Length: 432
Image (cartoon, rainbow, N blue to C red):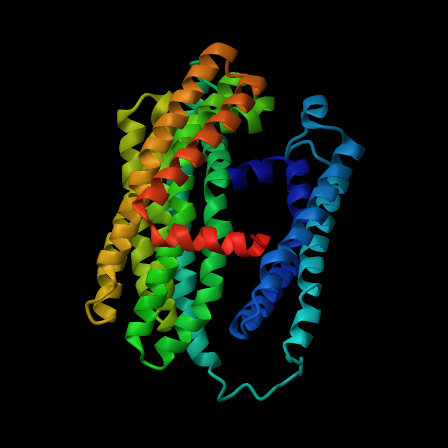
């Protein structure tokens, strides 16, 4: 459908050609940043990989600011892919490319400090490039499997959103789905990815040495440490999803923003298996096994597509995408069950399951009353102040404070050791 629209619309075709000119150098700098970051991670230097994306964000934000200053906001221009000028695309392309270039160049001083020197070499034989290509083959198939599932969900969500629009329900289609997904993935990107960036080199060394108990201990550490933030975040999305989106997407209209909030709530608890899956798959990568993650992704994509199709058929169009958001987490829950069994077998039948399960169960037990208290507060405040920007802000502040307060008290009484360790680390950083 998209290719037909581009071919039929010369303006859109020009935009696509103009934007494509910046794709290859953009991908190049993305790859350079990842490779340099992994070199630093392998040498125990994790800071640069975590903070240099901030420079990229600053440049991109400045670029969008310049775009709005030159062309105006969407509210005044209604500019889209069919009306934007090649100069506008060129501005966005250059800004995106510049942001990634700055992000990559900022890594160079840290590489020098770590003792790494760039040197061109052309003796490619005997350095494992063939083995790396075989591993990359399954990673490529991994991406294809993900995209196949995404295509199905995108088509169904677009269709359901179109039908809901005809009935007067805005913010229920694929755009709302993607907006909620972006918010939902933030804790994963900030917490779990950061934890595993620090742990993965250690896991890889243990796997290379054949030390399965050490691999198990580090996987357990990654799961339990990330859970301290991921589990409360999942329940926070469940309790605060509507005011959160009503505030962030207030410009889309009250009803539309609320509908995005319902989708975020449906994503909510699925954040837990989504994060667990990420950590568990690092165990396979440590053993240079990229084929098992591919097969696991096929299962996740198939379950997600099938469950989304059921939601599309069974649920009213207004709620179909909400069901698809829930299906996303359900698919990862199934994937986690399969991946854990395979990794347990790889590690000789032991994955520290009792300790991990106890940590997640206690965190969930602390989050349930916290989410109920926050949800009750949000309901009462929005009934009184309405669900506009002001009411949503008050709901978010009071509900968020209640959720954190009740969770902290409950977690402290349950004596969750990972929570105690994190509080101690934070106090140590603050000098208290």
